[in-house]
Amino acid sequence: MKLCILQHFKYLCTLNKKLKTENMTHIEEIRDDLETLNHKTCAERSRSITVQTMINEKYKYSELTSKIIACAMTVHKALGNGFQEVIYQRALEIEMQLTGINFCREYEMPVFYRETQIIIIK
Image 1 (cartoon, rainbow, N blue to C red):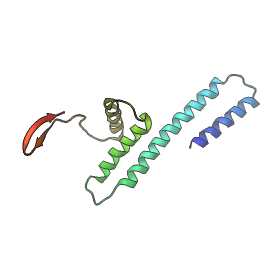
Image 2: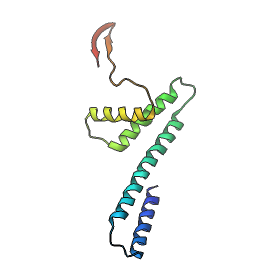
Image 3: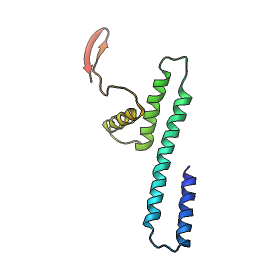
């Protein structure tokens, strides 16, 4: 897809030279729009492919698990690594909302060790 975007941009630049237009801002805006479209298309295609390939009907929550993993992969592809955990939590929250997954961001639950509750984590 990126190759296609570059080809469109080169075509627009050639067209711009032919028209002898010296104002490149319009061409730059079109390039930015094409890159944005490419990013959205790649993310949607990646999510769709990931979800489809990970679903295994023999597991009860396979479809939901696949959607969650796809969300996490989308966030990681967009942000990369190196941020604090809270940044990824917030981004994942946004991605899961966009996907339509109902969830609770931080759920309190007790932690037990040898049948003794040692803490309630949030």
